[in-house]
Length: 151
Length: 151
DNA sequence: ATATTAATTATAATGATTGTAATTGACACC
DNA sequence: GGTGTCAATTACAATCATTATAATTAATAT
Image (cartoon, rainbow over all chains, first blue to last red):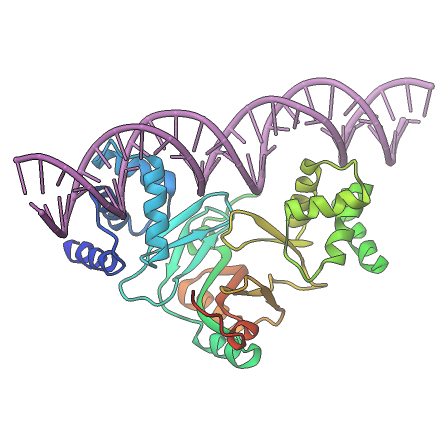
């Protein structure tokens, strides 16, 4: 973990930003809950446990900064709140998401499945792709088994 | 155009909803500006020209209803507002978008490029895909030509 | 006509996010 | 060590998109 904090510290410094205690606490929360998709408020509450004096606005600004530096991905599943995900070490792209319409769970796909599609977009539309986001909506394995009775 | 309005009217009736004048005016705006990606407020202002007595809440409710019935797609490009797109006649899926990071323009791809990817998700993850949304972020043809000087 | 129900309006409320002004903290330089 | 400078933070207010509420209206069936 320290290694990854260090890495992020360097990324910040390379753009002449500092890793302040508040920012570090925020990053640590994101590292600890890497599997989740936390909202700004979620992050705020968790950071508060480590550093009770932190303000919500600071968390927002920190997440915004990390998002600009492509350290985290800011995503939006259509439920009014933005969620923040640490980008996997060295990943050039957003990872993809499988959102279950039954239970609301979110799975991640780290593999990049879009190389071919990206090529098509570049060649046929002349659009230079920098990044992409792909979300599938459907029914996850679990919910297919537990047949949910329709009330 | 009348043909498409009729079609939507039938879709509403089949779920025992009515095509009220307000709803019709809203649908007409969406048809007229099919190429754009209007926010609820955009729609509201345009509908107001036809039917000045309409309220913003009604527009929201109408768009929400049309979205539930899969007549329009509600999308979110990460800029705080939801945008609403008429779904192409008979299309089973969201269409994809190319968002230019320079000029902010949005192009659409109607073709479904994800059949293969969807198969992989179904087979490897056991996830039953119902719908998907894919957005590419990058630089559009226009902006690649007009080299924008970095001030 | 009248009763019933859906739909709409105006307005207020909510909830997420951002702006502001004052304060604090870190670091370079004397 | 003291001081200046500038970024970062805090508490709070403001804003913006969206949703809820209560009263009113329109449409439909009886």
